[in-house]
Length: 314
Image: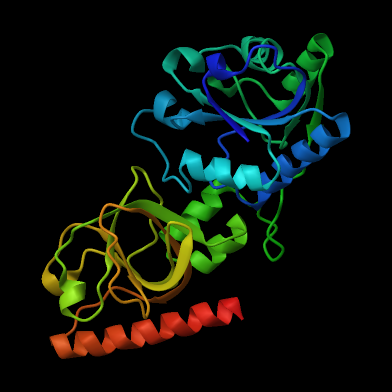
């Protein structure tokens, strides 16, 4: 899969393509339907499928300081899109100048002149151009002039509530610690990424050495508490007990994500980029009267995490 940053990265002589455009944060199940339809259409036409997305998130440029918590960094989104069969991902730097492009100018600059779109696939709520003035109807009208057609994919809804799956829904569930519900929206456990840094090393002293993960900026981190999941290092996913919070037992103030790789001894992870996948919630953040009580609770947490992970894999 090709990855481009900016229109200038698109190869000279790029031919017709099927295109879908959006932030696609999280590449959740609703996104997967749209991207999957774009890939299906591209195969029918024997042309590449291209996803166009933006960095930073448009809201950060339009309304500085309003950047939403991110469900996945761009490299992770590209990996997930590649698994869906996408042939190229174009990340457009979203600037103040770019945000002022009228819908028609955006279509000409991106879809017509550079990607030579044959079909554009979007959800019914897609908006684009200055002040989000462009709609799928606008896109279709412009397609009559510029020789592309538009396919609109219905929203994917949660069966019990009828609420459409969205990045907003996933962020809300993650923020509430409802990681199992978030996984339903995403189609996989929510992942937090970052580099392992040195912490206070209290986990090691207590018998449960943890990887202290310095999360990427704007990451959507689950609510404070203890979770079951996996610690993924260089492609290996290890069952893990995960703690999120400020460590009030030791009067901590900095919010951290720490993962203990269950039954693994002698791991040296400092400086490595890792992923932490959240399977299920175990309990909230607590303080204990004694260290022995804390150790006993940690042992229970590890046993519960071990059981949850084993059940999910069985």
